[in-house]
Image 1 (spheres, rainbow, N blue to C red):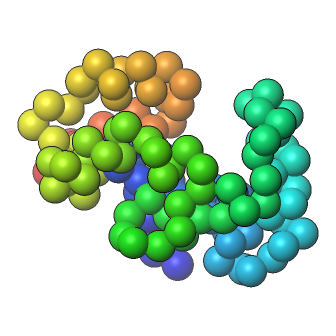
Image 2: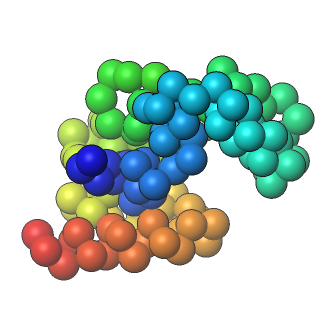
Length: 114
């Protein structure tokens, strides 16, 4: 399977929600929802809200991805991901990197190869 890098630099194809969705594995989706309810202190996370076909394209997006301001900005700027943006390292992205440093490493790697 080809690696899918989300606009923000997270690897969609490594995400348990994406993996369970692609495998059409309802039990795995239920486990992801339960884990995320606890991890994010979000009791309203349901199986339906973790179904995801990845950040890119027109497929189904899990709850946060559907409303992500970084994703919306990338779509608006027409970039494959933030590494391709002339404003790379903007305030939104810096805030996000505080929660997901691995996303920064991915985007920095992509940016170096451009």
